[in-house]
Amino acid sequence: MMRETRRGDCEWCGLRRVCFPGRLTAESPVGAALLSIRCVRIARGHALYRAGERIEAFHMLRSGCIKETDGSDGRESIVNFCLPGELLTVQNAASAKSQLSSIAVETSFVCAVPWRVFYRVCAQFPNATGEFIKLIARSGNGTRELLTLVRGRGALERVAGFLSNLCMRMQSRGFPAREFRLGMSREDIARYLGLRSETVSRCFSELARRGVLRVRAKRIQILSIQEMRRLSFADVFGALEAPLSEREAV
Image 1 (cartoon, helix red, strand yellow):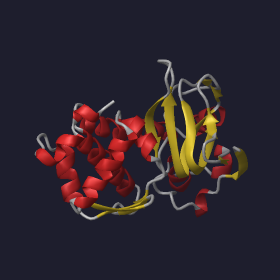
Image 2: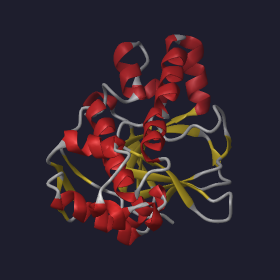
Image 3: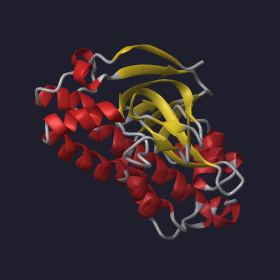
Image 4: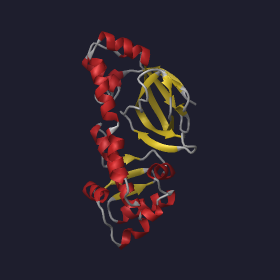
């Protein structure tokens, strides 16, 4: 179950230099106590909030992985995976009903800053507003870059682009880019990329066969980032890729 565990302790958090609340408390007179940061634990499969619920805070992911889903068209589609140090999608800079659901794909910890408190802090420390605007501008970069990599491409290219995107995002936040645990399931990845889960598994096997990566359960080791990126941007594949082409996209 989701439960509030404690006040956020930015001083001892490893994400302090990349997380907005942590960086703000480090570079200005704003303290974690003044921001009223609360650290919330969300068990695997449980929601931080669901579509239609009122959102009273903005959220930064501290650990784990959160999938954001949209069911406005009658079927639940995954629109984003949020990684540690990233901001969950800000839909309105105020208390408003969410259009998305945010669900933990593995046990996750999220830091929440209430909007009412943040507005008060911005009035006292104007630099907080500028920092937050920069954060919102950057928060969508990962998703936009991924859409550029996978739009209209084959299954193998989509999976390679997805993994390349994860590597870049983790590296930018100081995490190891060559070896990591993939929290999301193959089924979730397939729903996100518009593929079948069997196709995603075959793509992982093909990338392993080519020596691009090594897969051990949920542990992924990238053996050749250069080859991964080449596949991400490749336009034409030979006969080996034919079974993994756009025909297998949902």
